[in-house]
Structures are given as structure tokens and as C-alpha cells.
Length: 196
Image 1 (cartoon, helix red, strand yellow):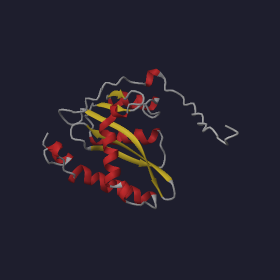
Image 2 (tube, helix red, strand yellow):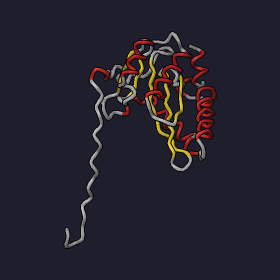
Image 3 (cartoon, helix red, strand yellow):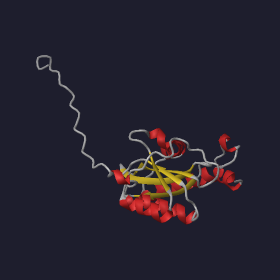
Image 4 (spheres, helix red, strand yellow):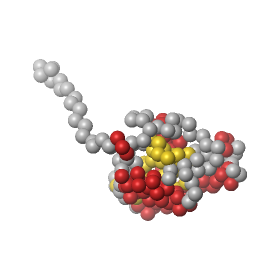
């Protein structure tokens, strides 16, 4: 290799992440059966990264309902931390105080935290978690991220956090109230929800 001036590409060693304790990990109760018979039976949640300005990052957390694919709650933040996820859950329960859904997530550090477990006890939802490296286990929210980014995020430039926040708010309002889909009999998520 020296004679031919060839060099091997050496991959960097991956950082060692602290695995979540087994007591905070839930089974995949959802098991890809996302369709619900009524509102607030099955929720899916996740966090996605959004860039603005000159490479700055913001994080969008959302909960989507399996019944009508409506965005039940969302929070945008400068930081991807426990507070972001807990605020998303609290906001969902402020709007739906009597809900006791199956709440599905991946195994991210926020969802395996003690704080999340305490919220589960407080609101009495059933936890469900995707298997390792199986993004299709959380398909509804992953599909929403793809739809949002294709229809809004990638089409605009955001110089500031505030302009990104306005854009997210505008799109989610449109998505819930005016984005008509064949699956919902030609209705928007909120129109379909009102017929339940």
C-alpha cells in the first residue's frame, strides 16, 4: 500500500452511549398496529432536528394521533432535552385531560428517563417503545416528519429561530385543519376528528 501510495479509510470509533436501564424501557406494545378506532387511543411521539441561520439547530417534538394523524401537541426548542419532551406530553394532556392512550416512542434518552416514567404515572398512559434501529416501529410520526419537511421546511430559508417557529406553527395549523387526505374520506385531520 505504501508503494502504491494507498491509504486505508479508518472509521472513527463510535462514542460509547450510556444504555438506558432496563426498568425504563418498555415493550413494543404498539407492534406497528397504528390504526385507532377513536381519538386519543394511540399516540406516537418523536423529536426531529431542524436547522436555521448559519447551521444553528432547533428541535421539534410532536405527538400524533393514530386515529386521524392529527398533531395533538408540539413544542419547538433550542435544546434537545428532557424538558422538550415533557412539555410536549403536558401540552397534549392540557388539551386532552381525560386521555389514557398507548403512547409510543423510540428509546431516546428522554423517553427512558425517570422524569418520563413519572409523567406516565401522573397521566396514566401506557408506554410503548420501538425496537432498536427499527424506525418503521414509529411510522406515523416518521411519516409526518417527512411530509412536513417536504411540504414546508425544505422549501424555505430560516434566518432566525423566530422565523422557523412561525413557519412550524403555520404548517401544523394548515396540516391539522386544511390538509385533506383520501385516507380520511377527503377530510382534514381535525374535520375527521370532529365526526368521531
